[in-house]
Image (cartoon, rainbow, N blue to C red; front, top):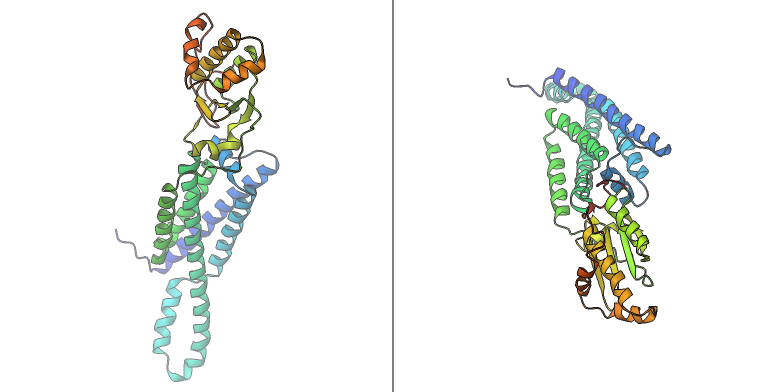
Length: 332
């Protein structure tokens, strides 16, 4: 069944759907903004929390911008005339005789204003799709988590753009092309290493962890039990730093030696190192300075030779790791 996109009834119906859906999308964003004032959110996924922490001035800026853009689209659409009326004007103006030209010029000015409104609406949607392409691409390829709220807003703007496309605005296809191009460009960029994030130089052991990670909890508990002092840092604060090193999971223990730094990832690996370190320290004198010198000069993977004497210790039964920001494993 072929649909006549230039019919007057179809144009009015498309415009009505566009306004109604724009209003619903704006209300959805307003609700999220209101909930933010009460320190809650429509979206409770980890992707939403990571996306919120990634915004420089807070996610309220994006919410407010989205609300204003949607409101502007509603207002402009209310003042936009149907293409059918414009077509009728063009045909009528061609039949006008010289005596009716004055009235025709006035109608022509109105037609120009209508075309400007149409161009403005389509340009806004094209720009929005380009921005949304970047935001979705950033979440997919940089954060490796999707914010369900952001994805819903993205789908909403895509639907509005499709309504305009079905109404005969072929130029709106540029928006989809921009969205795909920006999304693809973001996929080609590696996650940046945050060089401003400096590790504490005065700490021998630095542990990156995430709240809700049971593996991290067990490692922290084991460090306390073995009297190993570690500097605990939330991994989310160093997300770009860790992802720039190819690390996407916690717990991560950084062994801060004089001339190098070693990274151990996962509960099993870290626990084995802790057990070997305790045994290593007990085999030396109680002089801490002497042990520190031995620690700094210890060869790579030297601690594995101490695993066998410690076989009587309770080993890591629930070894593993969690993706940064996610809750996993059985809590203590």
